[in-house]
Length: 231
Image (tube, rainbow, N blue to C red; front, side, top):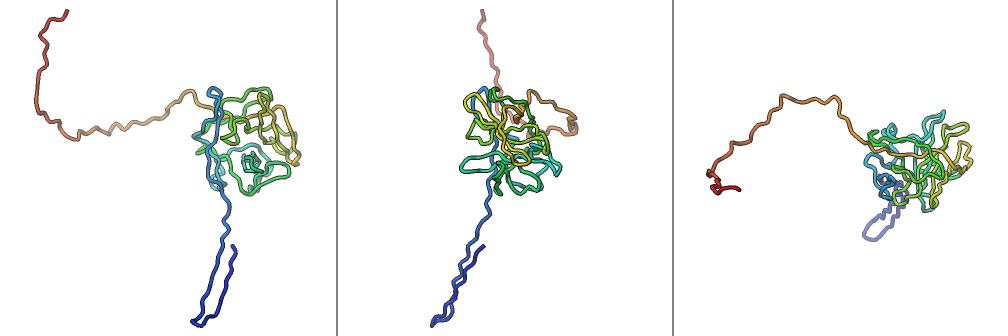
């Protein structure tokens, strides 16, 4: 916050001009998460995943991309030079690292709302076609997905983005030492659509009775009859 105060004496008395400028902290509105639909060849929106601003009380719902000795590493994204890039939200959880040399304080975290979404990490190879249910980094782009690869040391996995150029994909990531890597295989994040639902422990309230609001009123009675012979 910056403040400027100016005081001037006039014949009619004293008057004060007070100018206050407030610099607001940047924030990004919550956004839906895009899923690739292989049958429709387009992006659909998940009803149980969202990109959200960091809230300490919601961290148990954030999607974990890797594990470290200091704690889980969450999936985050932020805008870098006009493009929305996937990043790593590492412990101390204050910035989203999108490369070995770039990190941003304004970012979004991938949240599984009430942990209601069924998400899995599925094996991926560069010649695999874009999978149905694949989670994209940005809903307007159907060629960039969330990926990772098992790390040789340090973190359990190196989180990165899978970029498809035509029919071939590449995994761009970086490790704990911030060394940037390009891989031809790894894992891709999918949201699985249930094929059926099962209800368990359903309790019926047998004491509840339907009460008629009013008795029906009869205004007129008629008998409908057809006396003609039917062939």
